[in-house]
Length: 309
Image: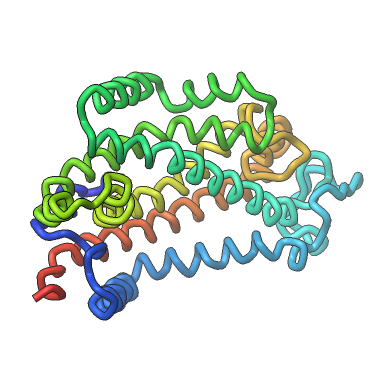
């Protein structure tokens, strides 16, 4: 999926970051109205909300403990006792699916947090100051882009002890170059605006300029990319855990569920379906929400003049 950043960057006026309180509130209402009228985005938001709530409320709604085993029903098909069947250890698939969502979403949140924490200062300073620092940051990100994503994640994962935090760090490293490039490109465009020159002329410090003037007006495509990154991180976590370098069994995650199901083949294929379908539906919902955000935010940039006149 590609994001049309050129369309978002095309406006010659700064986006929502420079609006005063009333105009900003008006802009937010317009954004929400546009998003609300985007039917696929709203469907994705509803589905994603249900999945997240199920994960958060796992102890209350899961019918069984995720580690409880039923020795008489191993790799069983759906039944009244186990609505989604059991895995090859006799553990309830529905309960592990619900609890696994908590772990998978936790890894995704850590991935985005780590990646943004590293990329934000690098992209901001490289784009604003330029010179040798910009050259160094650009060359390092180019070098990281030369590695296939899964290969780079596996290389990082082998350095640390296997587990949830390792999976988050390994995946975050693969996300940092893309975030750095995006932030740098936005800063390069924003720093040429007239209001930046005016702020510099009246003595605004570089630190304040970066965090109070540059960043708020370069954040629009970053918000969309963050939303999309949750879907990518979800798939990356599942792949890393499936290969045995991420979350480890018996901790439930959608990746470890796929690994357990694969280890039981060719006995029965049923245990593969619950985590596979859950991943597909969740990533699709995230992408629909991100597309809706892209469309709403992108259109808003073109209407900023209406708020400032």
